[in-house]
Image (cartoon, rainbow, N blue to C red; front, side):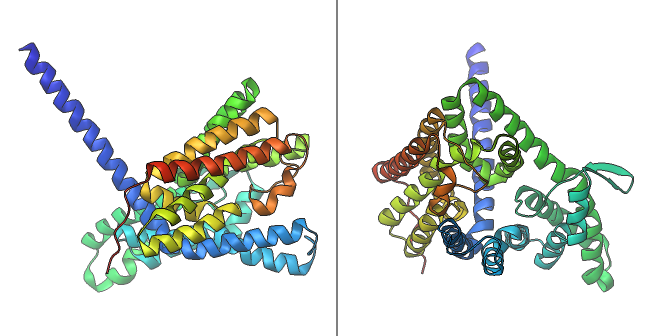
Length: 375
């Protein structure tokens, strides 16, 4: 009897593990499916951001010049409006109406709404007080919004008469999804991000090398859900108060780790399309934009992402121990290296180089399950 109970418990435990693994696989498939269609455009924007950063760092163009403003706008536009791109690809993946999804995204980014959230910390929306949230460059709120849109549309398509369904379903869906996004989804992302930011501060004060290892290991998985944006206000505040920030420096090794893993994939994969994506993604990552390498290559193949985390943790520990910091706000990359000049700069360079080498060698050594060419 006891043996049967043990067997029953083991079977239930195994079934639970299989369900969790299945859900995780589906989640990764959905997330990757949202980003793969926009990878090439993202890579182009990332490389352009790197070029603009180099031109600024070498004083070829002045940040106050009209030329810089225009070129910076060209380079930054994709990332500012990434919720719009994600709305379209997410809707396509989840089989929601793509144009209604884009409508939801542009509502979130409307200048009047954006300015309202900037001017006030608490917004009175339909009698409910909600926290201000910045939706530009965000990821998680729009994904949650379009996931909800999928289910809301299914309900309205069943109950709304066919005669008026074509325009009433989008209307009713938007009136449901947008308020829920502003009231629930946006603040949820902020709360999760704040918890992570506070945890980082406490760990760094306790042990800077440990903080570097933790942030270096976790920062790229955080990018998957957009949680890394929660660290931006903290970094900006640190620079304003102290004249420097350590968070941006600790991100560096993981950035170069993404580049190293993507480059290894380029050399290993037999898939022609993946090889092309990996090549451009590795260049983009070197310039500080990791999303193409993350979503288009390493997350898709799974194992390289683990190697990126390991490399980021090791490199992050080195950077943390060196006390490296950023003198102004800029995400780490080849074009923004001058920002990290100062105390611990050699440690920053060493950590980034080691992370690149480790992720490259681990991916080469342990490889991954390649994707077959499709005719």
